[in-house]
Image (cartoon, rainbow, N blue to C red; front, side):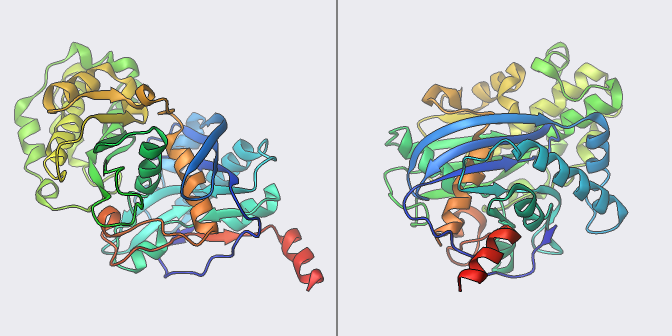
Length: 386
């Protein structure tokens, strides 16, 4: 597990040139572990490889969810065991890569107070899998005054250039929490001033999923079917938008449970009306966020589970002043983009390149986060060679 404790000097991977990395991501929606392979030199994307998904069981979800908002204790220890075992299971088949990017599972995030906590020991994974593992991506950023999130923007910048985009574009990830990355692909380096602006837009799928689980025993509102039958409670929506978070200038980030009161606002509503209102809150948070963009993007490319919800996508299309479309429209995989991002970031860490900057997390200067853990056996061989 890792809590912001200060920057560490990463070990470098000896191989030169492009690397094949398997990125692994477990988000706050608690659906499961995504794994995706990417080939990159840490700057440009050369190509994408295979991907897979390992779902969490209902019991695993309950165990991890019990640790949300906690910094230590038996719930955190139990969540850590589940996360590590699930990732070892998910990554076991990936033997033809140079390294692994392991995000871990965020349980608590308060960068201006306690720090940030992603459970899962990358060193343990390295020993189990026999491969270098890059992990603890957020701590160095938080130690240097950053929010520690979002971390995918540098990858979004590379994706825009890979897709041949020339004008400004926004990447909108709708996972448990929503986050927006405004990209100017005409600026070659992501850490350069004006290339990126990124921040969390507000809650996305997490409160909807929690509502579905609590009321109907469902993991999520599949296809927006429940929300499609409901009416938005405008009074609750107005109270939601009055939250001080929306008035804060970016960069800024959220913990999964920062908007717990959203559920309280819809307690008296029917299942359908509550789902419709929570969905509208997600879209409204994005609309508020768009006002912070340096200029209107040519389009908004939506990634993450939220893009599969047609009710949410329609709300976004109505409320935003530019085209909204799934990221598949430019040939990328919206289900695996976050996993690919941490494969990409792992290579940047291995190459000593920055992974965040003032425009993405508010950190004082561009910083390269992450720790590289080598398998114990490999370290032993290296020591013998010396």
